[in-house]
Image 1 (cartoon, helix red, strand yellow):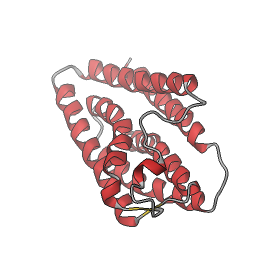
Image 2: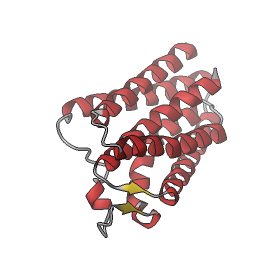
Image 3: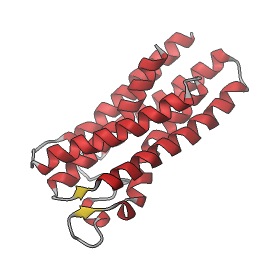
Length: 194
């Protein structure tokens, strides 16, 4: 069951990446292979650091409270994200840079040196969840690798669909889907701790 939870956390953390890849593709901006790899490495590294920090906190408190705290953090992030998306559903993301801001030389090709802020903006979406997963005792390397690998493939998949000019509301829906997944993970973690 732990590996299933790790997979769900990785998927929830990568849905925004899919939406960003699609959005940039629709705008005619191609994210290079090296830029995508750089973003995946940043996602992996930040997730690993925050889940290890959560693990250290988890070791200092009883397992029952660790699981409750883990579930509460993940549930809280899911609820906050859901209501924040609902409140701002008609406006663009306040944390994810838009395609024209990233493509500084306006050549429609986004290289790794143009993705620094985008990498960290996408990684911040996963940090709170990774911290909660660490408190709950999930495998740090497993979570970090899952987040990194799914980050790479979700951006690539979104990019391919976006470059085909597939019209979609995935950008808006991704926030709701990721939020609902985190809410379910949080509730499940709390229920199994009781």
